[in-house]
Amino acid sequence: MIDMAINQAWLLYQREYETKRIPQEKRHPLLSFRMAVSESLIRTGKIVKRGRPSSNEKTADPPKKRRQQMSQVRPLTDVRLDNVGHFPEVKNPRLYCKRLGCKGRTNIRFEAKNIQPTRSSGRITAGLWGWMAACGPGELVVIHERLNSLQYIEILEQIMIPSVRALLIPEPNPIYIAMDDSTVHNAAIVTDWFQRHPEVIRIQWPARSPDLMPIENLWSQMVKWDSNSAKTKVNLVAHAMNIWEAMRLKRGVENICETLVRSMSRRLNSVIECNGSYTKY
Figure 1: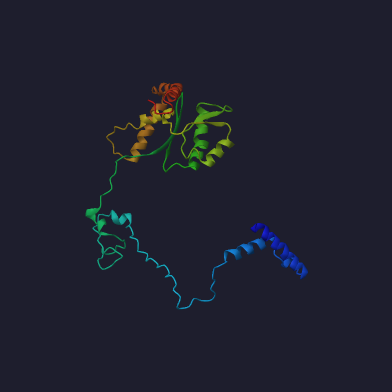
Figure 2: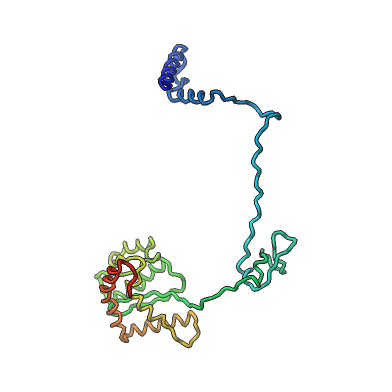
């Protein structure tokens, strides 16, 4: 009923404006007319006060602003671990250290007696990259910094392809390569590189499957380091290079690599039997 009444009112409104010869652009269309009527109905019975409120009217108190407290600043790592008993200036609420020349902020919980020194596991790590085939191990590369996608592409172009072509697969035969699912191997520029080099075919490999990578067994041979020399990164790299070169000199290693490659069928069947869970490999 209200909808019909509003439509009838709009028709009367149009007829009245036509009688007064008011231009069409100054008239309200039906939608605008309905909105105006709805706003009038909503405001019905409400008193709208104009102007500034008088002093006699009670107004709601504005919300009080909460004073933001100063957050406590954590001292720098060098300040916390320098084995110096830093202590705060009692009269200074900002807790600056009283040690001469020290500008670090501190707190009493960072005194030397309350600080636990960092512990080192004693492990030494080094970055290495290498490839292997059934005939034996290939080239081994020392990575001085953390491997990134650009360095990996450089290794593929300058080391992997030339060495594989010279030792194993001549041109124009394709090279099939198996890699794990690391972030470097799955980078966008690496994927684009494989698309631009169709002669190098990457085998699709499941994620988190070190038991399906035969080269992991070669790495396990290299970590056996029972040497009386100092445990340094230089000695670790030298030890790894010596083990790898010993394997490349065909000191019974060609049988190991061939055995590892031939074990792939058993590895895959074992994964299927375990429903994708851990295997003995």
